[in-house]
Length: 303
Ligand SMILES: Cc1cc2nc3c(=O)[nH]c(=O)nc-3n(C[C@H](O)[C@H](O)[C@H](O)COP(=O)(O)OP(=O)(O)OC[C@H]3O[C@@H](n4cnc5c(N)ncnc54)[C@H](O)[C@@H]3O)c2cc1C
Image 1 (cartoon, helix red, strand yellow):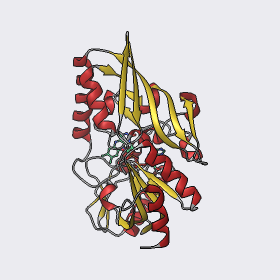
Image 2: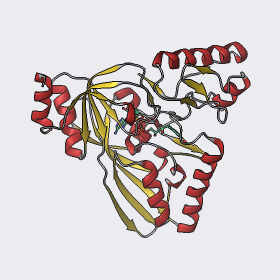
Image 3: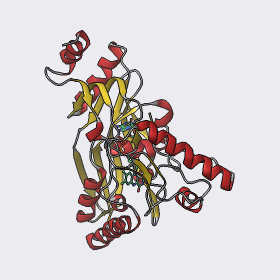
């Protein structure tokens, strides 16, 4: 056992740190990579302690939610990878308002389904969105039919700042926009979030959730290794449509290819060489640039 592993376990608990750990099963794109040190956080304290020990030992820290917006190309991630499994929620209902306090590791699809069943309106269209509340706030993840963002009904959140101190911030702190939140710049960690939802008719909220899931199944490839839409839309132009019009559906490099169902989805057959993914991304960007003069930007975080 290495000295660093010993030190990490002293703070985070014995047998809780894995060394050179295979991360692939926790990434929806399933690229092959390992974490130098890996820890599963089951509580708010675990998240806080992981941050504190990473600062103390000067180790880089990556917080991993559902791993559904990441394309890890590096063969090894140095430092500590913390998978967020802090799952907790509390709901208070007053008159027509519903106050939801939810932990950052809560799976968003599970949450959307539960809220839709209760008839609490505000997050139900995100049924089918993979990942966690933390990852969804980081990206301000969206649904487009109608256009709604995860950050829309956020009231406040508890964050862990770069120094490991907790702070409560209001919605405005996040500077939410399309695919954007302030977390992307300041690298702060969400511990918990507070949403204000509307008390509504369960039939209506269930219908919204079911519609979103049906629409996903109709328009997106299912049951494959992918990280969803790879590129951002540009000024309301769909990146998928540009990729499609550039004739790139089904284009393949090694074990990575462009979906024939949705051209913004890259599918990994499994056990592919991440360099092939890099080549495919460059090819897509070049073809779209040559044809439309538009430079595509990744929505998925490539590391
Ligand atoms: C099949 C499929 C469908 C998808 N559909 C959609 C869609 O409809 N709309 C959409 O917007 N996206 C979609 N996505 C992309 C992705 O699911 C979302 O961006 C999702 O919100 C990412 O959450 P995550 O927990 O998986 O984040 P991860 O991929 O684990 O992490 C993404 C980033 O967030 C950071 N992060 C994670 N947790 C925290 C935290 N607690 N505090 C601070 N930072 C944190 C990570 O460090 C990382 O930088 C889809 C992906 C797939 C695979």
